[in-house]
Length: 340
Image (cartoon, rainbow, N blue to C red):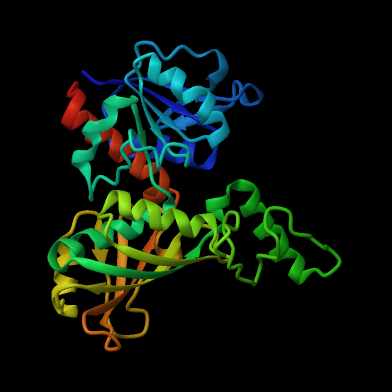
């Protein structure tokens, strides 16, 4: 016996990826509904070897459905997620709307799977920000061993994190560089993204940080440990898919780089590729389509007493969004619903 699953926002990048991953991981689906806005009604999407037509989210009745994986913006989620939750369907939400709600668990299954049992307060579970998700997978096993005091992280985030229009903007601007008669002015981003980097993701806050940077701080505290101090600089780079992060940690106990490498090799969801030679590390292009979070460039930071540096790369449409949501559904099924 399997589950009745709804994918909300099934025509978007993340929604389509959710469908791919549900099929790849052979999630026990008895019945699947693919939902979208009225303007996308009837659009066909793939689920394994099946082709499904989208249904109208506005009129859909969630009664009797087990889980709904939401991949729509916060405004639409605010309208439809409570309806699904009130109908008895557990919402797994990819937007930022519920991440900081104390009554809604924020889950990365490799890190805090036990927190999924708190879903019942609102019948909603939140998926973290893409940049946070891959980072905490690496932080948690190191924190368990040596207790992390402080994290300094700089991100190199792909344009797919901003959606299809951003990917199109990068493509069009890149072509225009080689054909100067085709001027493509920035629309999604405040400045040209092709052949450039932009140290600005989401809105600016009063203290000079951006909302994306604030998210990494708040979410790491909620998922891993509220005592961790974290500072982030989030940068958009001209890469289509795959986020990278340069991470520096300071721990309470000394942690040798070789032991850290061994710990990360054994940790769930992580693949260590760390050879001190040309090409002995993973880049965003190489992680696309993979489930793992890749760790490279592990080395001691000699400027502080207990410090480590490492490089972290992951497919943001997968671990940063769709994969993590499906893993939450698996965790919920295994720990709580137990139908399959």
